[in-house]
Length: 509
Ligand code: AHR
Image 1 (cartoon, protein in one colour):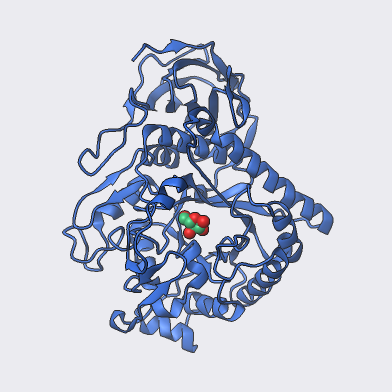
Image 2 (cartoon, helix red, strand yellow):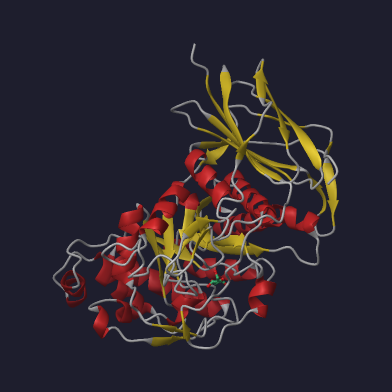
């Protein structure tokens, strides 16, 4: 392999006075769907040597905590559009097995709502529950909410108590269905149909618990023909009753066009800005004062082309579905997607990396075997650990490179977060060049003395390198050398095709 060459420097200035907004911890959410092996042999595997008394794999719980996940969306995804929540509660031996039409699998209901709440308690995560607006409607959503959140004294709330949960679950975040715009969705609807159903469901749910935060389905992707008009129609109907509109986006490398793949966040940022514009357009039309925020509740790298080629037999239990093995390149793209979310933290106040375990996931397991971190685990864990506080405005002056999909794109993609209590500043940066080192200069205008605490890099001489059960630590972040901060200017060299986290702490005199 030839030695990397160096491009002209990329630069930006950080000024404490210019901030995008505060990071909502819910930006670091994830997603557990009853699909493939996310639940069964993923988070739940009774009889596994690491399983606790409730069948939860403690090796996985530990990795989920290390990942720094804040919220967990559940139980789907496409699965939720056929979900009968009643099947998933009560004594296990009485729970029915059902066909899961969305994934052509058999759902045993061995793991259900109570087990999920147990998982949330043990991982310190907040549940984000979805209701079925595909095959079901207002009544079942209200009943599920009553079961979950009403203290007691009614048949449904007393049923929860009888099932062992004396205290109400107090679930705040609720998704009003999933991807209802998609023709693949069970109970797919037009925007008008869904808008009516969403507003009526929201009203009924708020009658039970006015403090809920409700997410209306936006488009399942910005490429779908109804994109933007869907959001506008749904919000015209439901604006007063909902708090968020959802966004979903998945990216993959196609036709060997890695340069465009590395620029996926250009599309993601455009998507976010288009949804913000649509929400604010409806706000203006309705003369409303409140703003609708964005819940980017499915995002990731997903090799859909590979998933389509590997279809397991119908009606298996926990089949291997969407078990993408992520490379260093994928991790750099995922890091860039995190940067895109942070750069819009004023409006993207909730997000869920889809999914958490085994299914397009940062954590992998083998049945009866180990659990390990995929390459994509690292940017997420670092961002969740240090990307808390105020996002500073970053306007990069960067050399560009040509891409087939997005035209000329800056080689540098970056954001910075400051923790006003500790005074720490963390810079997250991606070098999109496949061949060149990118020198970076940051002018820390308006910040007093800081020192470089660490500069961690995810990059590899083999951009295809992955972690596997046999080599779980093949790819891990390493420390960069030569990053300096002199007279308020930071100098760093970003390796080709790399994700970087640079932490600056207040200098102790
Ligand atoms: O995350 C996998 C699937 O992608 C979800 O079930 C669905 O909502 C989306 O299309």
